[in-house]
Length: 232
Image 1: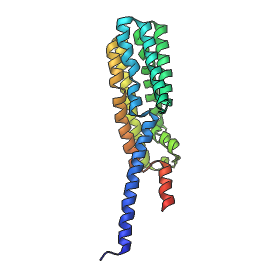
Image 2: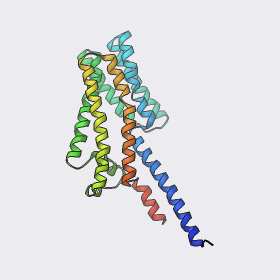
Image 3: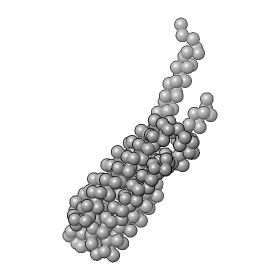
Image 4: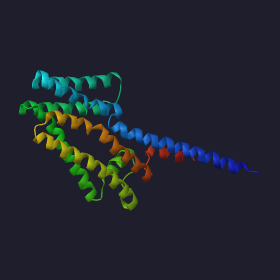
């Protein structure tokens, strides 16, 4: 006949499994929050969706104002709904920079120049972080969740974060290579399509790899791990 200790141990393991599951879900939510959630990823494409057709039918000036108007509307919408506004503010400022470049150049394709070179810079920074043995995904996750930098002395953990960081390098590098080619050949319509198609879908892929690396590393959010320890 099973003893009461056996039942207690089974209950404890079940509770631990449920808690780990909640921690992993929280890890996913934390990463999504940094990007504004799925809605934030989709909202970020709206100014581009509006810019190209308006430019075709009404000209560059109207397209610039339309893109700025959409970005402002997204910001107000998130304020009204009390969603995190930092991604919307960053998005609005980014659209402002893109609009300014397009206005100064007098060409619609100039709207995409900032994003093209931003991708190149991000790819370079993430690559350097791997070369100096401080993969940026691990560094950022450690800062956001209080895990510090001790993981850098564990080769297995470094390899996991190397892989996640390399995935972001591929994403940023692919965006730069494809979109810069379209920019150089003056294919503004295809450039807008590539911007959208290589935006949140590729971000979702890189995010999935990042979540996998965090799980394998056992680096769930520190506040939930602390709660587990305090309740033991």
